[in-house]
Amino acid sequence: MLVIANPKRPVPRAEGAPGKAKRQGGRAEAMKAVEAAQAAFDAAKEAFDQAKSALIEAKRAARVPTGGTGTTALLAERSRSYIRDSEHKTAGGNTSVHCGDAAARKLLGKSLDECYAIAADITEEDESALRTRYQHLNPGMQRMNLGNKIRGVLNAK
Image 1 (cartoon, rainbow, N blue to C red):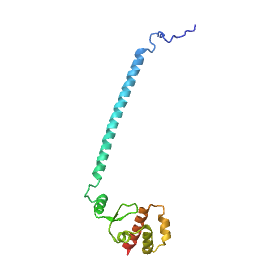
Image 2 (image 1 turned 90 degrees about the horizontal axis):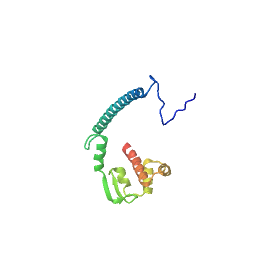
Image 3 (image 1 turned 90 degrees about the vertical axis):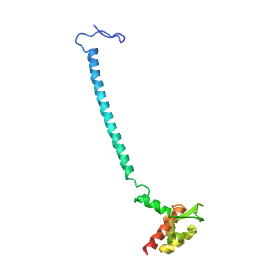
Image 4 (image 1 turned 120 degrees about the horizontal axis):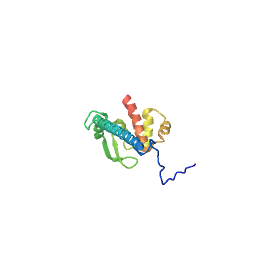
């Protein structure tokens, strides 16, 4: 005889068949495993957070404070000695800032075309080659690169 189970009414179980008590026992073991895994995860996360905090503190401690001897401090100190020349303006109309060395004085107040001519003369390179090399840069970067090129030649002498 074929018995069709009614989903609204549970089928009675025979003695010894796995029932509610066995399912609850398995569920309790699974819940214990989940709790143990969660505790392990929380401990690992706490260890990670402590290690990350220690790394951040170590990086902060490794930074050179203002007035130190590192590169940043040297650049900050050097920038204080730059000359802010409001008499001469950049191509963008801003105040000119320069270090005041021989190369900076040669280019002071000159147009970009004049800078190319001076750089070509001092470096003994063709002016058109210099223009081709730096044409992709904005005028301020072109002028800076020309100044560095002049500075390199002057310092080598």
